[in-house]
Amino acid sequence: MIYLLLDIVQLSFMIIPILIICTAYKLIRKRFNYLFTEIIHMVFICYVFILIYIVWFSMPVAFEYITINVIPFHTIAGYVTEIFAGDLSIKIIASNLLGNVLLTMPMGIYLYFNRISLRTTTAAAILVPIIIELGQLLLHYIGFATRSVDIDDIILNFAGMLIGYYLAKLCKFVKKSKYIG
Image (cartoon, rainbow, N blue to C red; front, top):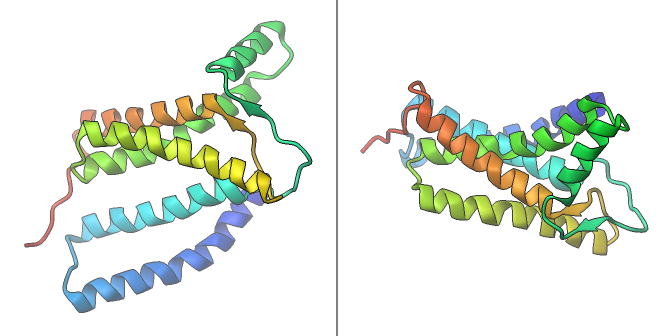
């Protein structure tokens, strides 16, 4: 966990110049939105970089094989079985299952904030996890495998995006973005 945090700090040294360039570009072009909206956009850019790093580049160890699960709910059912058998701690299982849900919740919140329809959000909730898993598979084939490829991850990431969208919709403090005309 500490190594992941250190990696994210190092990643921020790449993200900060990008944010400065984006801000300068918007100021020069006079396309600067309300400050709160701009902050949300910049936080989202940071989130995307961190997401990409976590799902594709953290723990860069080349494995000889990669586990691929194409049976829906197989991994989830295995975790539930291991909970009742006492083979794995609830902490490990919760971090794996909830981690996949929490990973994409900010994206659902961001889509709601930007007035994206539920239909478009649902399409994104299908496509983004598929792209993540296909990227992991591609990285395996080029010799840079970092994660397993699992249909359950797609299901959990999908659920995370929709939960984020609906949580944002329920929360009165999440205002939809405003743009300067």
